[in-house]
Image (cartoon, rainbow, N blue to C red):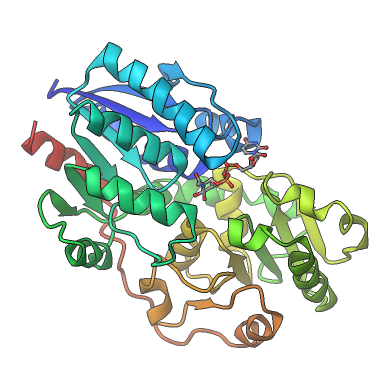
Length: 352
Ligand code: UD1
């Protein structure tokens, strides 16, 4: 074995990334997997381990929900204990959640080098908790795995040029390896009463969109009036804001959060995707489905260049005009060649 790596995950987007990287990593390194417990409901956590055969976590920290400071603090303390017991050669962190920041801080303070998967993303909006998590995690990381050229350039602007590797996106690797399973998942649409190409697939959970229940209710009411079917799996953060609205919506179908394969199936067959998720913007692009992003900025500007993604915020006018247009340009290939995981492991081997 080339060395011992502790990988720290805790939230939905991290399970997906670990599902891609962990099996490749384990061919060369000993991996200890730590689940912080940031996400804990079956359909926010366990379902991903089952569907994607993610190895059982070796440590489950069961931190759960709370304010940002409390949640990050609890994780910091508990991750430090695990790292003191295991003293690995590397700590691997993923993305931009509170679990990422806590792990990056705990490791760097113990002088254990940190590897950051999905490094260099920037929205340049410091009000987003994820932006703070990204910037701080990048600045304490020793090795940074960038999914895109833009991410490499963002790091360079902040003076980070050493240890930077352009690997491509691990989510592209995973999506490609699941293509057959997505096709085989065709019953999903029928079971939800949806028709291929005639519905919108929506997800919405970012803090900026769930701060005001009136704004969200106005947006949903307007979208509902448009008459097009919308499949909307609701994140637990968003659910409490919808209680008054649920019985009044005619065309928007509120669903429980869905697993990875169902989400990709819903994406692939949708007329368009409406989302404030970073991962879903990319998945829509990779599957060739137009996306309207319910935000004012994106960390994935590559998806905007050829018209396959459009920033519309929570305003119905730009949303409806975006829905009336179809992208005409061919898509580029900004997310790598589908071998990001191998490149990450090679880079880790070269410094171990
Ligand atoms: C987190 C990440 C975000 C990521 C998202 C994916 C941060 C700052 N944000 O946001 O980058 O896109 O995960 O889903 O880390 N809850 C449950 N059950 C669960 C998990 C959460 O009910 O299994 C509820 C809790 O009431 C909690 C709220 O959802 O207060 C928000 O959860 P939290 O982990 O704080 O952040 P997310 O909004 O999920």
